[in-house]
Length: 88
Image (cartoon, rainbow, N blue to C red; front, side, top):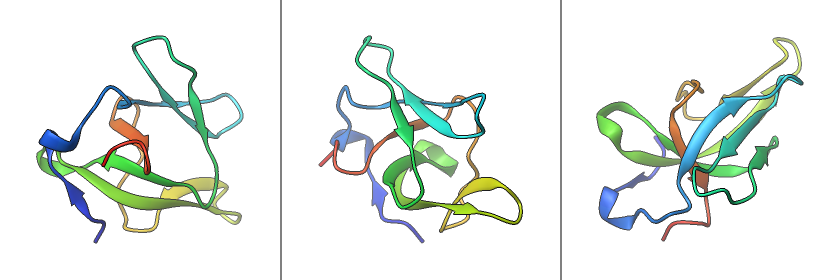
């Protein structure tokens, strides 16, 4: 299971997951800062059950042609997310 991060560790670098037309995912920030496109191998903090942010790595399944969390956390539109190194 990914490492759980409490809400007290959050800062303004938390955005929302958004799918891109290419099939990739991006973290979109409401403060107007640059969006972050997610690539295979990236470590991100991802919102899971109970609104906690958990550290996970994103990989790409070439057969299913989709990105996934190695911990099985679903990638869903609007979920809170941040770069793995942006909260700490």
